[in-house]
Length: 172
View: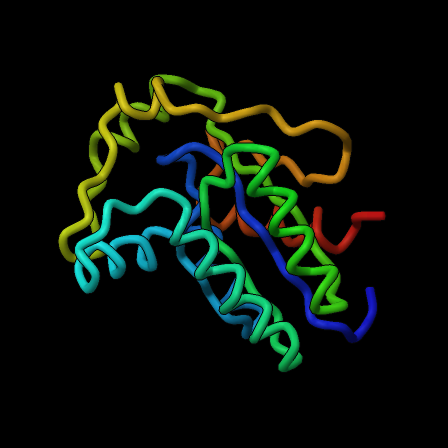
């Protein structure tokens, strides 16, 4: 690892633990925390728009500004398709930064459903997806080995963070 700032990009379906781990990682690293849900809800509230890809495009710009300023960034997003993954990669390249792709899963469908159905929104006005929404969501599998995968199904938050930090530290 170099002294360059790092872009840590989280991916995964809602309810897998992405936001919790992204917050923990950003605190641990002292990095900027960017949450797509916050940005998208802000666009809905302030601009009244039907948000499609605008939240991601705004997040790319904010991330790049921070990286160019020497600040690492933790991006909390579903990052469900190759297009968004490629665009995050482009941000890191333009900012001459390192990049770490992180895919968070919950392999136990019962536990995953319980998480989705029991959580509450911490963003005013944000309607969280239902379990049916999660099941219907388009999410393409990652291709290649350029991603750290972490299954949170049988881990506590602390165990998940420890496993994540270890995987980041030991990546090639």
